[in-house]
Each structure stands twice: as structure tokens, then as C-alpha cells.
Amino acid sequence: MMFSSSGGGPSAGQTCSLVLIFAVLLQSICVAITFLYFTNELQQLRATYSESNLACFSREDVLLQDVDADNIDESDPCWQVKWQLSRLIKKIVAKHRLEDAVSGAASSATGGTSQVSTANEREVSKNAVPRVAAHLTANQNRRHPENILSPALQNNLGYKINTWEAPRDSNSFLYNVRLNNGELVIPQTGVYYIYSQTYFRFREPEGVEPDADPDSDSVRNPKQMVQYISKYTDYYPDPILLMKSARTSCWSKKAGYGLYSIYQGGVFQLNMNDRIFVSISNKDLVDMDKPASFFGAFLVS
Image 1 (cartoon, rainbow, N blue to C red):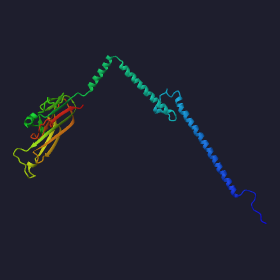
Image 2 (image 1 turned 60 degrees about the vertical axis):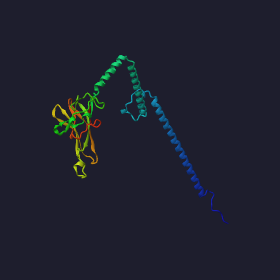
Image 3 (image 1 turned 180 degrees about the vertical axis):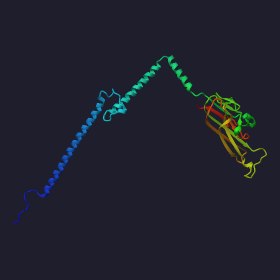
């Protein structure tokens, strides 16, 4: 007769199951305890932070003492709030003071206000740059070279243009500047902008027929055009060159005439009684067309 070898105690499988269940319960209890601990800590930090912010507004010195941005204690949790409030209060106070000052000035006696205004106007007028300017256009009634140009100047400065349109023309004017023999007389020392444009026109002489030969001079007709802007001064007898612009041009052999204009301008220091003028290199090519040839200057400072 056979008997079972198993005793009355739990089997190995039951023992493993009990150990596994106990481990899971223990881990759950640890997680729960950890969660409750950190939740409590976060609530305490939040409460401390809120009380700190409220304390910044409840402290007696938050609006009474000036906050120096250069001497801020960054360990103080209230320094940013105090600094911003201090700046805002100063800005509002300054604005109200300015409004009060403007209101007080407006309510002052009319005589006192007029005197202050007049004094300010005199100061501005004293510091303002006087109006010194000139713009001259060509004189179309005297377009022949012999009538508008002087003899050749020294220092190879060509022929000076003597005749410009008088200020009677609406396009010409003189403000505190004199025109004498084609020269603008500077009334005061200062920095001036000077400019000029000269119009050139070339025609073949009568009886000259264009040659079919491309090397013929009658076809190419190279012409040199130079415009000079110079000045006379009390300290030197000869003219002094300020600017020069040059061009050598060959007009089309099929054109009846050739046209070209030269413009230049610049800023120069001039003294009182200096005399500025325009001259050209080729007197046979200049054309004193009013809209195309002009000369001027104005005081900058």
C-alpha cells in the first residue's frame, strides 16, 4: 500500500506567490509615502514663496527708500519689485512736476512771456547761418564767344566767362553776393558749395563735307572740352584752380552737330572778398544756352 510523500506545509509555488505579493505591496507603500512627502514639500515652498512676495508689499521701507541699481542685493527676493516700483514712482513724480511747471509758465504775465520769447528768438537768429547764395544762368542775348569770354587766363585756365544773366531773370538770383565781371564776390568767410555746368555745341565749318574715309579728320572731329572753376584771392595775384572737369569727344559723322555738357560741384573754404569764376578751354564750342549753362554757390556753414 502506497502513501503520499507531501507533508502538511505550503508548496514551493505558494511560497513564491506570497513573496511576490508582499514585494508589490511594499513597493506600493514606498511610492505612496514618497509622493505624499514631495507633495507636502512643494506646498510648503509655494506657501513660502507667496508669503515672500506679499512681504515685499507689506514692508514699510518698500516705497520709502531709494533703490540703487548698482548696489542691489540679489539675495533679497524683493529687490526686483522694489527697483521697478521706485523707477515708476520717480517717472510719475517727474511728469507731474513738468506739467506743473508748464502750467505755471502759461499763467505768468504776458509781458514776461513775451520777453522770454523775444530773447529766445534773438538767440536763434544769432546762431542761424545767414542767407548767402547765388545762381546765374547763361545770357542768350550774348552767345557769341567774343561777347562772353575774356582773353586767355594765366596758368592755362582757358577763357573766363564774363557775361551771366542778371538777376532780373526769374531763374537767376543773388542773395548777399555781388557779381562783378563774371566773378561772384564772397561776402564772408565760410564753407561754400560751388557748382557750374557748361554747354558745348560743335558744328562743322561751312564748306567742309564729311569724308567717306573713316580716318579723315572731317569725320571724327575729336574735340577737347575742359571746364575750370577758379578763384582770385587778395593774397595771390594769379587765379587759383579749385576744380576741373575734362572730356574729349568724337561726335557721330552722321550728325549735323554734336552736343555735350560738363557739370561739376564741390565744397570749399572761402575767405571774404574771394572771387570765384568759370572758364573753359575751347571758346569756339561754348554755347550759352540759358537752361544748360549756369553757375552758382551758396554758404553751407
